[in-house]
Image (tube, rainbow, N blue to C red):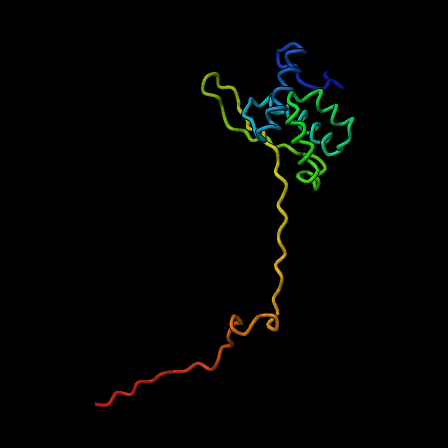
Length: 154
């Protein structure tokens, strides 16, 4: 039994595995979506959610922890700048895994991992009173319908 065993081995050495996931997290945060196999996608979700949690915290120690994993300094800067406003409303689940089917070459199950976009705030439409609208643009009140009758004279 695998009790208290975190992470997947996926037939790689620990150094290869960590380097691969560091590269994949960097690519995901840089491009907002990557295409990979199902097993890697499920594992990369854990790494990416942890990076976004660090970015939401936003202090210097969190930035240094993120720099220890993410390979590019510009990506970390971008993440820390936009994570606060992009993911502020959610308390987790920052990534989405969408299954794409099988890869043509070896029939490996493929998935798309993407960052969940923050819901856009709806603009409040003000109700306009008739007193605030100028008379030229105010809608006209319907008057009594006029019925035109044509009398034919023979």
